[in-house]
Amino acid sequence: MKITFYTPMLKQSGGNIVMFKYAESLASIGHEVIVISPWKEESERIRNGVKIKTFREIGNKYIAHILFELIYLKKYYELTEQTDVIIPIFFPLTIHAILCKKMGKTRAVIALFQDSQTMLWFGNYIYTILRIKILTGQIDKFIAVSTPIAEEIERLAGRKAEIIPNGVEKEYFYPRNAEKERYMLFVGSSAKSKGIESFIKAYKIVRERIPDIKAKIVTQSKAEINEAGVEVIEGTDREELSQIYSKAMVYVSQSIGDSFGLPPLEAMACGTAVVMTNTTGAKEYAKDGENAFVVPIGDYEASAEAVIRLIEDNSLRRRFEEAGIETAKRYDWGVAEAKFKEVVEGADDKSR
Image (tube, rainbow, N blue to C red):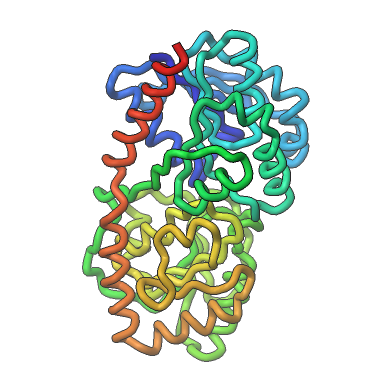
């Protein structure tokens, strides 16, 4: 089969990590796999058996988002070869995939739904598209990365989704029994939707009560943080990230729009207690008071209080650490990749 993925960007993000896990897995068993995306320049290259085709971005990232339905529609269409299945990983790109289906460039469209209605202004746009039956009727399969997201798709679009939760890379993220260091940890981009500003506010409250506590921020994007006690680490590999997870006393997620949320689960896998916001994705695996503290979105004061409790109560923290390890064991990439392959190959068979 020839399988084409559409992504709105190529920088490392949770959505792209998931996409490349699936793309590389499919390529490894003989499928021809292509990824199409805007980028800094027009290019074509190979990554682990996956062909990557890019076209030049237009304007800044905000203008680029607005232009998805205008200029980028043509770009994706032009770069799409005759293919069996198109898989957009950002829901607005399903419009581009449907155009290719209408014009005979693909037999099937599968929406890998990783979006959330709380994605700032774009969330409302995504959920408006979901309600348009003339569009969703052209999608052969929905894949949801969590049960709550599948429920949202059924409620808005009236369509059942295949639920394939994300996995943990267990070759990297596992309990290392590392000695804990006195820092709270944030992993993610500096985008507002990830809540980095709320993390800093929570840290300042924690530091007032526990003066020797530090904070680390791991990000793949540039983040200018001028706050005493905060260390910003850019561009880590998976092995180094695992070490950072393992040594943290508490992992803190302040996201407002995760459809799954890999970093908190990776932290659990490494044996670190977690405090996270009550996003749609959190409902997939986080149980408040059992394997994590789950706080309201935007409530950095509640996050700070939860962190303080975990730092001051060693037995509670260890209970969360042990429960988190058990939780993470349920999420395996091998299982996810096998089910993803089954859905993709099945969608193409039904379209013939």
